[in-house]
Length: 117
Image (cartoon, rainbow, N blue to C red; front, top):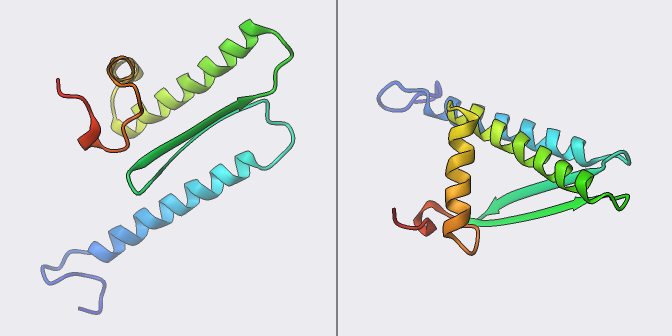
């Protein structure tokens, strides 16, 4: 059908387009966040073809405690973001992430790579 609905009357193309638009908007926001000189720390993770790649960098003044707190603050922000996306409490995400981190030597690139429970 030419109205954006499939054979069953569902607006599948519209939903896909909205998802793509939302992704593009968030990607644009990420690029804006990375553009500038005032960045003190950054943690970026991307998934391409099922492979996870991450990097972390921070400007340091030699204060190990501040460095650790900055890294934890970024981790906490990511945990909260994932929890909000999943509709669960941050403590649930943090616990699951800690369990997963303790079970794998490499970050899994897909759910098929997760360890058996």
